[in-house]
Length: 149
Image (tube, rainbow, N blue to C red; front, side, top):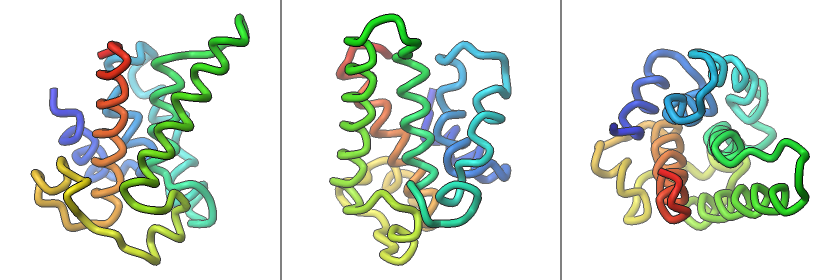
């Protein structure tokens, strides 16, 4: 499955950045169809379209990682693991785009580069599409490295 293409398609259908990213992993998450899309409905545009908070693509990546490596309060080491995983994801995103806040990213308009292989392969031009596809690419890489995909 080309999760990057799926995320791109979800965004084209009108889903926000967070929904598009987490929706690309819906088949692995195991919740009823549409649940993850509903749960991330308010995270687009830097939370509620304000552009003031964390990029929706980053929020969606964190949500996907959290759902695929869940911490439900049972053991502190599981909590530390998911925190570390999500912190690593946010850092990798920042390594690519230098920022993680929606408004800052919109102002910078970083575009594609050698660090955005999937966006380059798909010949994407739209800012949010590049953020979405790169977030999916990073989550996939992290899951593969962890042996979870």
